[in-house]
Length: 165
Image 1: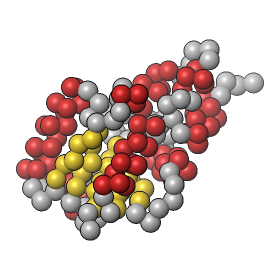
Image 2: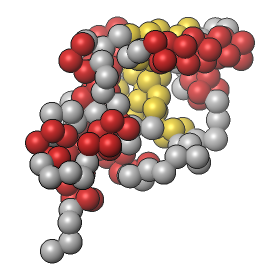
Image 3: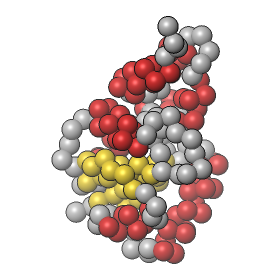
Image 4: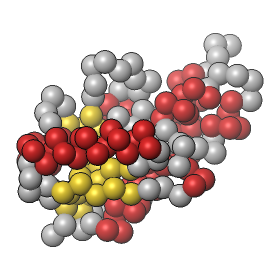
């Protein structure tokens, strides 16, 4: 059985994340979507909220598990769930350089785990959670942001960022 991990902060989950998960399910027998926490980042949503947003944005599947991993190396988490692959997205040359280094470090720690890279289609190639968060605020932000995130995520963004009445 081919088991993979797709890890990220998913704050918020975007249509780019959804594309990666869909492709991951086409390639692997089981996909873990692992939400990590970085104490250096300020998050819009808690880990539990991000797990719920992902669960509400994805079709139910026995081949998909949304989980949290914290305070461990990704390869250690992968080994703990029996994953042989790490799934990563490459949107730009900057992503490539970072992911290339991480692939080698992960291989040093766990040579039995392979990293698989996917490149998203052009229409979502520049999409990131940071970009989405950066679009929020100016008048009419809702129309723009709604194009880049699943409907449950958009609703949660509207709710959490609603202007006081």
